[in-house]
Image (cartoon, rainbow, N blue to C red; front, top):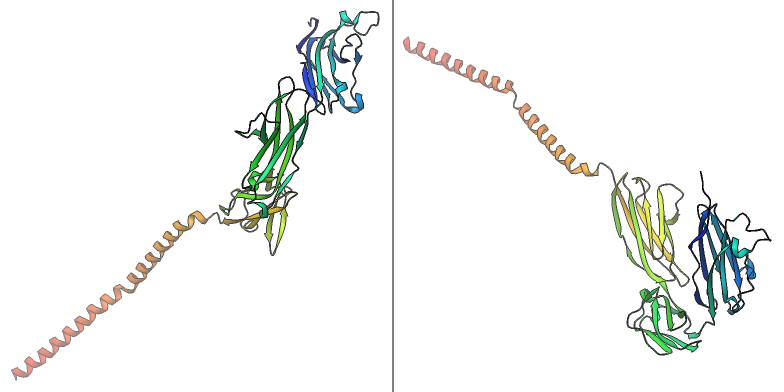
Length: 373
């Protein structure tokens, strides 16, 4: 038997301060039996008495509402590309009261409410360097990235630099104008740089500077030796920005043939600056050869080769079979040699010696007979 229980909040939306152009998301998680219905409402700043219901796709499709009903009711309100007019009070309403949609009832009694205030501030203006492209010719020339905070809603505290999402140590300063120098830029110095400004009463503001470079493959296998039937793993890793598109090819005759995941034995996995080619159940006839990984981005491309050798599965037995062959040859030589020293030769030898003795005895006898006469 299921007992009904009134709606209650597990998670209610939280107030936030955002900048123009940003995105915010508000979460609402409710329980009750039966599962409560969820609605989103909005009121402008200082107009708390005039709430209007929000719908998915409102405000020129900048509003999205995603709600799922199960044991709990869970709803997410998302508004993108914020403007100053998006500031206001946002309200999650929930109810499982059967009278909740009866116009004669007071909604304050049949619906529970949770509110969050969203404050949208004008995004500070930051003048930043244009994107920089590193080339082999300029690799010895220092690169300077620069940001200048020109207008801000409140005084800033400090600024710092970030590369690929990680703060660069020892770059914090209180200056509005901040500079980051790369003395001898190489491919590994490329990436997404950001100057970030912090404020006491407002979210951080930032500007992005892209430093781009052709991919440079910094690691790969020169060769791989495997036995037939085994699996082989070839890989390449690179530096350079933007992250490259990876391709694998195999030398067939005098030209390269592209490799993909369609054959069932070749599997390519690539992510950012790394790619891997796995070959299953190696075939000694078709798989050995020259393999090439190629990294390509908008600046250029680079490639490296790996030589794959596949030995017969009998290969580990060759040393043992070699010793066995030597033993067999030795045995054959001994047998042949012994065969040539046959017993017949020995018997013939005895016969010859007997014959000689009898002839000698006969001669002696004749001599004795002559002497007797």
